[in-house]
Image 1 (cartoon, one colour):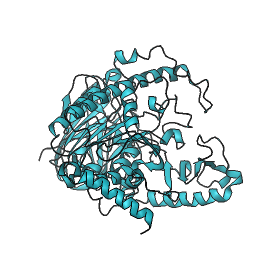
Image 2 (tube, rainbow, N blue to C red; image 1 turned 90 degrees about the vertical axis):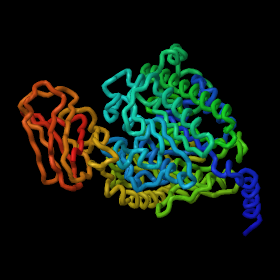
Image 3 (spheres, rainbow, N blue to C red; image 1 turned 135 degrees about the vertical axis):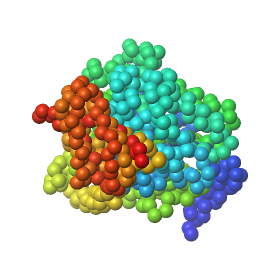
Image 4 (cartoon, rainbow, N blue to C red; image 1 turned 30 degrees about the vertical axis):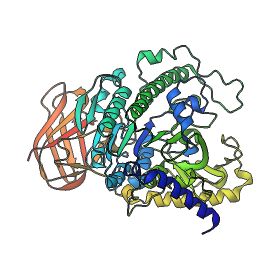
Length: 585
């Protein structure tokens, strides 16, 4: 052991002896806060002159600020990696809908890991990793859950708010411990208030609170008193003396930014309530707080000069703010420039909270504790793989690998020559403006080999090849409602009527009553079909102008299958909006 390693070991011993021996501090409380589609530039602390975020700015000032923190380009993959410490493709998560946002139940989440130390666990807000057994929060380690379904409120998968249209964020029906409950108020307020109540109930024992706001994701709905704060601003102004690259904003972009900033300020006020409660309960010092966002902004607006936004593998899509505050153990107000990712959160919490990492799982993330403690870490050898395309990764299309000072980006065909890629020296060109590939083909080819290796490994992951199935007919979840977010089949299934769709399910033997819900009312005298492997059931619908068709007393044997429903009338084959299956015996 060299002198540097001895010094680091002594520092660890001093810190964790001073702050970690007592039972009350051996397992600190953990609050993980994540917002939805809030870009890097949607904070005062990252240079935005318009948005009002005094609470988060104050948190940033008191925190360890990771200035090179990366996530996935879109939400469900980010959430899968955050919860497991693994690339999302290893977990079975490959999309945000199209049946690709269900995480395999054999994955081990942060919540399940912390249960080793008897943490009480709760999630409040967005899950987006499966709405049915065995992939719900309650199936993956959370004692309490208050969530909306699928990728967002007002979206097709969240059928309890979808039909509320432009009021879906207000007075919603949410899912509390897997049961529908009606709530009064604005969604971000509801999630925060219930998180505070959870913390109050569990203040005497270690807790893990995952406060996962669905704002400022679309639809951009916000209380009027917050919108008024931004109604008259020009979000494109204030950068006249800034030489970073900026994209043009049209009038819709500007109006969207006003609404987003209003939603972010509402979140900021809610976090003020939360942090005050920690002080009132005298648990702030022994509570580890993380604040982060899940990807870049969906709309065009200030993103600190970076290129790209949500869905892009350029920095604007994947670099986000990440603040970590733990007063009992770490001195705050410190910038950390080391590379870090969403996959690092689980191993970091494993070390700080004194719990073992998940066994028999390949953990792609690394503990950030050595970096926090000042150890000189060289992660130049550590590659980061990014991709985003619908259904499955498309080779070299919106795909990138970053290693050391270089980043190789593909927006090209599967058989493209190296000249068709982009290569950036992100140390010298942090805004990814200068493609240097023609003069650095050797470096690019080395990165491409690394990209090929990572891509091939990940697309052959067991949980991706054998996609997770929704289990129907258990006491855990009966009846089961299959929603459009989890329907695969044709690409881009959303709220279309005439489209081919199916659900990957595992049915337990028994007799079932089945209800098919349609977006629009259907005419009588068509045939309702249900295909499950070799078994096809059909019934003539005799009710005119109905949005519900029922099939009762259908007996299924145990089977894994694609469940394929459609209503055939005339030349049309109409996919139900959702399907409910209730096992009756």
